[in-house]
Image 1 (spheres, rainbow, N blue to C red):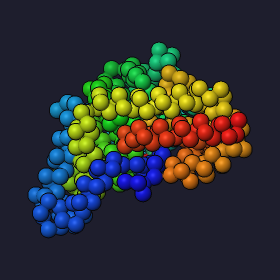
Image 2 (spheres, rainbow, N blue to C red):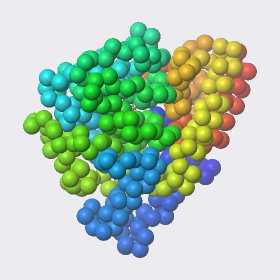
Image 3 (tube, helix red, strand yellow):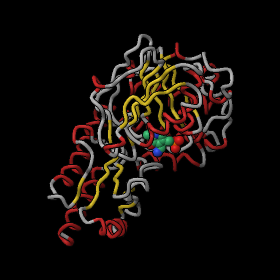
Length: 364
Ligand code: PMP
């Protein structure tokens, strides 16, 4: 609808318009139940049908093997930074973290409370603009897991392939918060994938964990019940009251992604959108610049700067006047950032690059 803006926020982020309209049409009285999803018992048959369909649609989208559990959790991806070592490690266990940006750094620091993490690589000295060559990684023998952040939301670096954990029985763990369901993923390469919903698949308040079932059930005794994967797995994510409405919204998004033809299709659209934006930046003769190494540039979060930084505030203000909002970079890095998740229409990216060319013509 014409009264909506193009919202380039990093998360909470834009959602598909047809999903919002469907939610609106079902808000007051969900499918003849006489109530909204917000008012339903989480143990009633209506909500059970919603959460079961959300799970089965997600399983179809990502081709999740049957030996993996899908958990709908709370506390954001940040809570997983603690849940992971608490569930997978004893306090003396070694684990490895690849630190490619602020989010993997936060995960690494939180883990130090519960086990013995090592940062085996950090991109900090290069301002987090690249991803290591996997063969150079100095992995710890006998590490329990290797943790990566598949897409660094703030710095815009994305793994295009994944490292293999070196130790026997070691598993790969990925924070996919900001590229979840943006492309196909071979789930079987991972012990655990987790993601906050509020970028690609729904509202904030839902965190999704996809975990190989044999990793469940060995948490440290101090683990709070709400962080114990076994409790949630044994109770089908209904141990306590789940974020019902958020799960319903995620379910509508999964339906929508399937209706688009699944994640191969979605990836093609994302490649196209990101290509248009990076080409505009790279073709601007240095007026705009993206600091990220080309081969690992994110399809989801596109950071860029202006050669004349004094124009940045003007750029953001003028863009907002043209209904393109939330283009300011993260406070820790400055510049601009356009988040172009699944739900950002091609028209939004086209409008942005047209604006960028026009802005350059007026200020170059
Ligand atoms: N990991 C990544 C990659 C993120 O982008 C974010 C949120 N921006 C988080 C973790 C933290 O997520 P939450 O706010 O859901 O705790």
